[in-house]
Structure formats: structure tokens, C-alpha cells
Length: 413
Ligand SMILES: NC(=O)C1=CN([C@@H]2O[C@H](COP(=O)(O)OP(=O)(O)OC[C@H]3O[C@@H](n4cnc5c(N)ncnc54)[C@H](OP(=O)(O)O)[C@@H]3O)[C@@H](O)[C@H]2O)C=CC1
Ligand SMILES: O=C(O)CCC(=O)C(=O)O
Ligand SMILES: [Mg+2]
Image 1 (cartoon, rainbow, N blue to C red):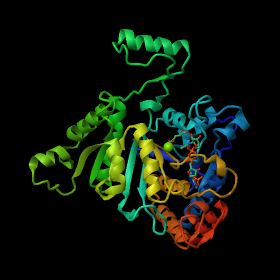
Image 2: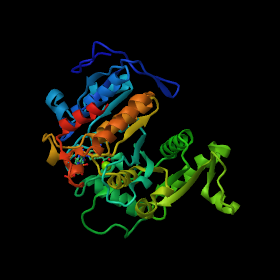
Image 3: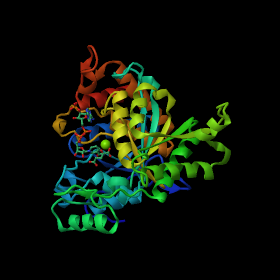
Image 4: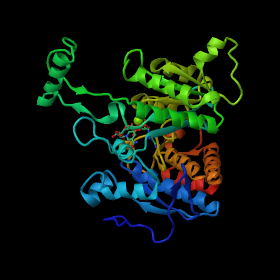
């Protein structure tokens, strides 16, 4: 493949996607987007730590810089160049920092565009507590969840019409007059959006969540929806989710309803329980009884809200990692955004992006390098040498810059 403005490393080899996994050489070429805002600080920091963990386990990462957002506007005069998409398609496994999306007018989310264009349909966001990280809750270790968020549809599909346009009035007329929703929309200006939830999108996401639960000895998968209100989208997500559980997994999975019918309520060994919860109530259980929840599966918007909220319980957005998964493709990225007010100040916490790299290593089968990163992050934080976000929540300690904190982690590897 030839690229317009991307330098492909001359050393290193390609990670191949094979049989639902990856064939990973010891010198892989890995694409990376540093990202907008704090991406200029945390991107290089994460690259350094991940490179050091690879080296410490006898490997070498050959980084391939890719561009999106501001860095792409500078080089290509566009937000999401074809080079970037093609390189992720060719090299299969990569990592990105955050990309800014303007509120209201302006271009649509480049993060969402990358997920959709690369068909990275599952946004996986584990929420676990690392020793020494301060938390606003009494028992942060009670939370050990993995959030599977549908990544390609729901209100993030981007089908909406702006107030004051001819199009929005056409949609209003169609909805009111042809679809029978007369007197449902208030008079005056309106903006209208569409929320598609498909059987295809739901089932592949729920399948991925159940497979993960089975492969990782997890006890349950909870489908999180607002199906009491949105009956044909969110409730349908739940119904299709249960269909997958009931029809595709045999004895490996049992639904909560079946358990209740059996009355003794005992879960057979090695069986994953699939249940569902309504999204607003779930946000209270996250705080009150997190130990009862394990793997969560949900539509796009619920997953976006829930992952930031859960992240707060284990130390905040500076810590919370994530990865976008497709079939034979991985693009790791932190939960947080570009935090513009900290951009370029060398102060943001790189941990979320570093732990996202850990998720990427897990997908590559680099369990030893992944463990090294976990231990080194834990070591750095427990010595109380931390970035500002953690420092302000603890007594004493030393406040480090992003780059210094990355060096501290490298020293712990
Ligand atoms: N996947 C992506 O690329 C995402 C992109 N975005 C985009 O990012 C932009 C900003 O979004 P916003 O809503 O402000 O959310 P952000 O996640 O960017 O930041 C919100 C706040 O969280 C804290 N925070 C976030 N990341 C870190 C970090 N690494 N270290 C320390 N503190 C951190 C900061 O809090 P404090 O200042 O209080 O310390 C920050 O001001 C928007 O354009 C949005 O669309 C948002 C989410 C995901
Ligand atoms: O794309 C964006 O700008 C925000 C997306 C977001 O908040 C997320 O994916 O968690
Ligand atoms: Mg978000």
C-alpha cells in the first residue's frame, strides 16, 4: 500500500489478523495517533511507556505516526485523511489519543467516524481499581466491570436535521401527517434526530460481551437499556440481546428469569447469567452495589454516559482506559476526550492512554508486557509521584508533569 503523507517504518513487520485473533511478530509496526488537545502530551508519554514495556519483554514496537483532527488539518488540510483509515485497515492493530469535536456547528465526531469507517463495533471500557488511586467511594475495589458499548449506531449514527431548515420541516410533516404523530412535537422551531438500533448491530455486540464473559470467567452480562420509554429501540436491544443468550449459547448461559423460575436461584458452575437493568437505576447500582455487576452491554449513548460515571469511581477520566474492537481489528483509545484547558501544558494524566495500550497488548497476546505496565503504573502511583488530577485528591505526594510521570512509570518497568 502506498501512502500520501505517512511514513511507514522501514523496520518491523505487520500484525496479521487470523481466525478471530492476531499473528503478532516481535517487531510489529503499530499505528498511533497522538490526538488533539492533551493528545500532544499524553500521546508521546504513552508511546514511551508502551515501547519500554515491549522492550522489557524482548520485543520492539515500530511506531507509525498517523494523523487526524488538528494534526491532519496541518498536513492534509482535512480532518480524517484516507491515509489514516487505510493504514489502520492495513496494520489492523493501533492506538489513538482523543480527538476534539466541536459542539453544535462544525464537523461531526472524528472518533465516531473512525469507529464506523473501520467497523470497530464494540467499545470495550474496563473499570477496575488500581491500588493507591484515590476514589470518592468507600470501596473502589468493589468495582471490576467491563463495559461493552455498541459503537456504530444509536443517536451517534448522525442522522439529524437542523432547526430552521427545509429538511427538518419535511421530516416533521412526514412524522405528523404520514406516521400519525399529530400534536406530538411542539409548535415552533425544532431539531430532529433518528435513533437506529438494529438486530445486526445489537447481536454482534452482545455476542462479543458474552464471549468475553465466558473466556474470562466472568459471572454475568447485564444488558442496560431504557426500554420502558424507548420501546422499539432500547427495549428491542434488550430483546435481541436475550435472543442471542437463549439461542446461541446452550447451557453456557442462563437468564436471570430462568433462575428465578427455578426458585433455588443457584447458578450452575461456569455458567454466565444474562440479566437486564434499566439505565437510570443502573447508575445508582454502580455506586451502591458495584460488586453485583460484571460485564455490561449497552447501546451507544448509555455506554458513553456510563463509562465516564464508572471511571469517576476508580480515580477519574485520567485513569479510565478503552479499546474499540472489530473483527480482526483493534483501535485502543482512552475514555476521556481532549481536555482542551490542559492542552500542551505537560500536566494531563497519561495513565488512561497507557492502560488503553495495555488493552491493545492483551488483544495481541502480549500478556507479560501488559502485566508489566499494570505493575509499573501501580508502583508509580503508590509512591505518590502523580499527575495533578491524582495529586489534588491525596495528602502529600509529589506532583509530576505528564512527561515526568511517564518516566516514573518507565523506571518502574
Ligand atoms: N474518544 C475521544 O476522542 C473523545 C473526545 N472527546 C472530545 O473532547 C473534547 C473535550 O471534552 P470534555 O467534555 O471536556 O471531556 P474530557 O474528557 O476531554 O475532559 C473533561 C475533564 O476530565 C478531566 N480529564 C480528562 N482527561 C484527563 C486526563 N488525561 N488527565 C487528567 N484529567 C483529565 C479534566 O478535568 P479537570 O479539568 O477538572 O481536571 C477535564 O477537564 C470535546 O471536543 C469532546 O467531543 C470527548 C470524549 C472522548
Ligand atoms: O467523539 C467525541 O468527541 C466524543 C465521544 C465520546 O465522548 C466517547 O466516545 O466517549
Ligand atoms: Mg464519552
